[in-house]
Length: 315
Image (tube, rainbow, N blue to C red; front, side, top):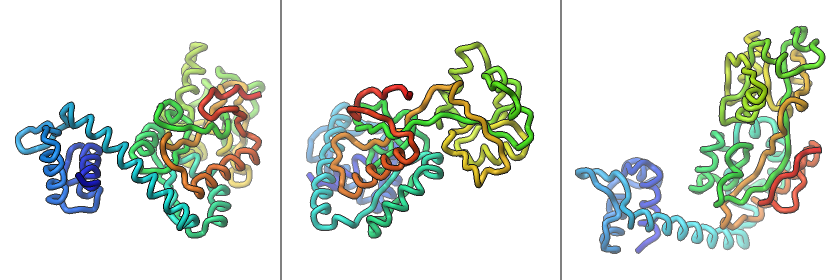
C-alpha cells in the first residue's frame, strides 16, 4: 500500500467520486488515479466502492472505514513532514488562511503586515469562503487556519481559539433621518429598508433572532456577504446598513453617519481554528499570536482560561 493510493481515495471522496476531478486536484492524469484506486482495492481484497455500471458513485461500509483511516494516516504524515521542516526551514513555507471577507478586509491587514516582516519567505494564501465551507476546508487540509464567527466553534475535530468580540453599527448617508432618532430601537430600525449580511455570514442569524424575539421583522431589501457591497448600496440610497462595527472606517467612510447598536444585539466572538491533531508550525503559531495581539490593540480581546471552554459574556 502506498500513500499515493490513499491520496487518490481521499481526493475521489472529496470530489463527488469523479475520477477526472480527483486527478485534477492531485495534478495527475486520470488513468493514474484509476490505477491507484484499483490497486488499493485489489490489495485489501474487499470492495471499497459502490458502482453504477462503470461509474464510482460512493463507498461501501469498508470503503468508508478505510477513508477515515486514510485521512488520519495522511494527517500524521503531514505532521511528520511539518516537524522536519520546522527544524530545517523554520522561516519558509506557505501559510493558508481561510477567512470570510470581513476578516480579510478589515482585520487581517495589520496582522499580515507584521507577519510578513517577521517571515518574509513565507507565502500567505487567503482563501475566502462561507463559514460552513471554511470548516470543511480546514478539516480536509485545504487551509491551515480558519477565521470566522459562525460554525467554526461547533466541530469536535477542531481546536478553537476565541479571539475578539464585536457587535454591530448602523450606517446611513449623512443627513439621513434615522441618524437623528433618539434612541434607536429595534422598532426604529424596522421603519426603514435595511441592507445587511446574508444568512450564515457575520452574525446574521442572531441579528434576525433579536427581532423575532420581540415579534418584529426588519424590511431587508438587500443582503450580501461583503461589507463593501453593503456600503455601496447604502450610498446608493437603497436603505440603511447594519454591519459589523469594526468594518466602519471613519476616514474612508466620511460620507456615512454611524450609530452604535451594541445595546440592541448580542455580542459575537470571532475565532481562529485548526485541526485538533495538527502539528502547528512555528510561523503558524506566530500568526495566531499576532492575531491575538491585534485583538488586544482593538481592545476587543476575549478573556478565556481555556481555549476550548465557554466564552464569558462581554462587560
